[in-house]
Length: 279
Image (cartoon, rainbow, N blue to C red; front, side, top):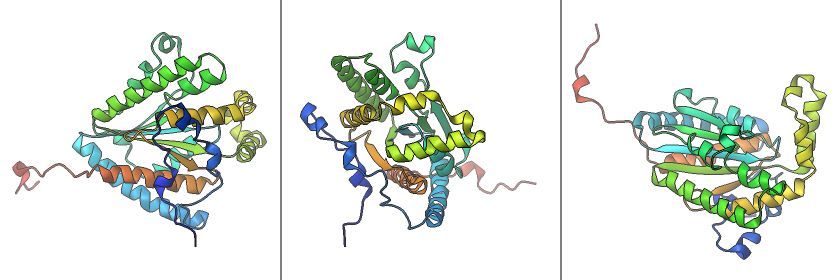
């Protein structure tokens, strides 16, 4: 019987030096694997439902305390399921303390500032769970593929990201970064499904096909970025995402573990309210 998978088996190692980072490869992770599946889509949905209830309770405690912050970063190739993960994992979570930030092509105003300016403004406030649907990592991926930055600038940006995430962690932010890892074949099927279904045409962008032509380059760019920025306080996890139900379960399990590590409790009861009866 093989060794049972652990969440930490999918954590990107904390590595130092160019040679160590080059040793990390996404090819070592099977996007079709389902190590945390409950055995079927139905069983996965049932497990996710139980996780969702727990996440709602944990997020309520986080919001009530208004002390810690939680940041979930979702990255991945087009169709890897960032939107779907958010819909599935957080369907039970009270939106009062939940916020989603999406980072698209920088506006002229954003482009006039440093690349982290627009991102820092979206960092979670005390008591808030914030999800980055794409993130500051777009600014080390896309420019690299397009040849807009050289190796020295990339190294500087990786360093800036590590320092930025350390600042957030020092300020009470628990950070979880998930790379939703899909195969090229699975992406083809999902893109084709958007073309074949007229109600999904709005989700299709010809730019997705352009990015697909650079699949290997993106895989290499992601691997380098993950290896260069996975740290003890802001770790990256590779989430096999060909199976949507498995993807959702694994992200929920990872996030639940983050919440549990915070030892969140409701604020102390108010003595001034003892004995009060509402008439």
